[in-house]
Amino acid sequence: MSFPTHIVAAGGFVEDGEGNILLVKTRDGGWVYPGGQVEVGENLMDALVREVKEESGIDTKVSYLVGIYSNTGIFKWYDGVTDVPTQVIFDFVCKPVGGELAVSEETTESRWVAKDKVLDFIEHPAIRTRYQAYLDFNGEINYKEYVTKPEFQLKHETYISK
Image (cartoon, rainbow, N blue to C red; front, side, top):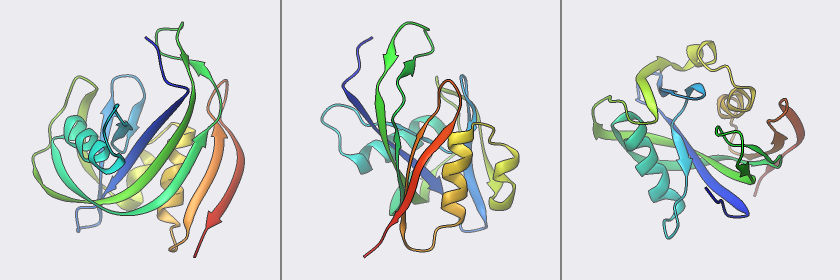
């Protein structure tokens, strides 16, 4: 498998209006909020809506941007051979507009979790860091640079404001 020099991805904090966040359990990485890579020729928002639907069965509308992240570490894909390049990730708040909870080739479970209980599910340090940034969102876009391998390291963080 070959990758571009940068992977562009998006994550969605899907809020159900009752204080719950949509989580999916991935086959490889445990519990996360849904999201994934932007495909060739696809725009960022469409990619996020597609990824949420594919991973959870829920249709969404993207509301607003809360964070931009750079994973500047290069590491091996799950196959142990392929290099995964630098990733640029955009996290958005989304609203559900239809669909029903489901699973996919990438996920084994999907569920709504109380916003204050989400960190009880998420173990991956980068996903935890990004979720905490969502919880702390104050209107300024959060920017963080980190590496995830061989271990998580937060390298830089700042805010982007008007």
